[in-house]
Figure 1 (cartoon, rainbow, N blue to C red):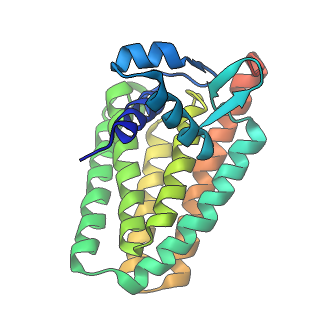
Figure 2: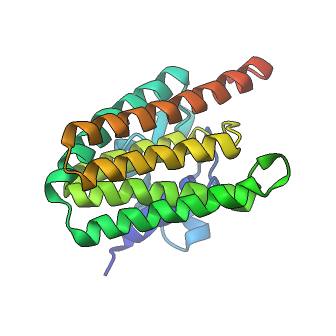
Length: 233
């Protein structure tokens, strides 16, 4: 049973994850309390917890705002992911069982299906629905590796990184056939390394995968800011 504070926290977190509360957007205690149907106290506590996780920032005399990372922060977030998920992939080799391997293989097969669907789209570019499905499967794959590694602290930290990267807000990364095919191949390499009980190969495969994702996001960020420079509200 969730406490009231936990319930409110999850509602606000979901709004941030889904973009209902957009990057750089102000968090109003009063408005959120009225919307959720609670007093301001649990809302303030939840916002404080989100701030402690780096998802919300407080600006003196202005209030609390959804975190808006800049380019340097985006790079740092991916560097943290490389360190944590590379370690987790290597550790997964030592802990994985048949069920874990089956889960990873199934998720990679699901990703392959999105690649095949993209190949049949006009211009070999995924539409919104297919992109959402692709990103969901990709996230589930990474969470599965973390689950196999068996370190919930690492899972929490990586989850925060992923939220912050998403919260950055609609960086224009085009999910075309090339990007999706490369992701599938990178995931396949990770699965092979874990199945082969080769920790160093698993670490390297995960590192290359996240480096490629970072390059795509930063390229999109650069295109976006060259057309309309990002300014903090």
